[in-house]
Amino acid sequence: MPLKFAPPKTADHYPDRAIDCQMSIDEAFREIWENVAAAGWGQEEIAGALYELTDNHLTALRENEFTELRLARVRSRRD
Image (tube, rainbow, N blue to C red):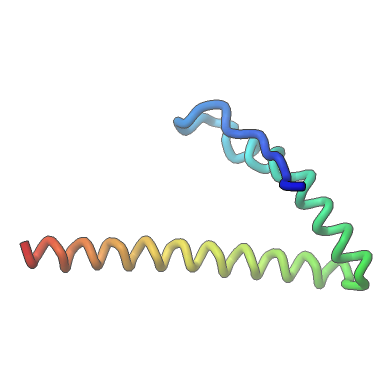
């Protein structure tokens, strides 16, 4: 069954948006943590793995954004 997540209160930025996002994913996060721990991984191993996955994903997002900006510049020079 797919997980359900609460959406942001508005599409615009608001002061507690990051906290609301954390609350939205908290249950899924705890479930992942508990399942990985039940498989035999240690608490620090889990925390490190989740941190690295998050950092790698954020790096990829930033690199993709940078690549899109470079491509837009190249395309604008051709026009």
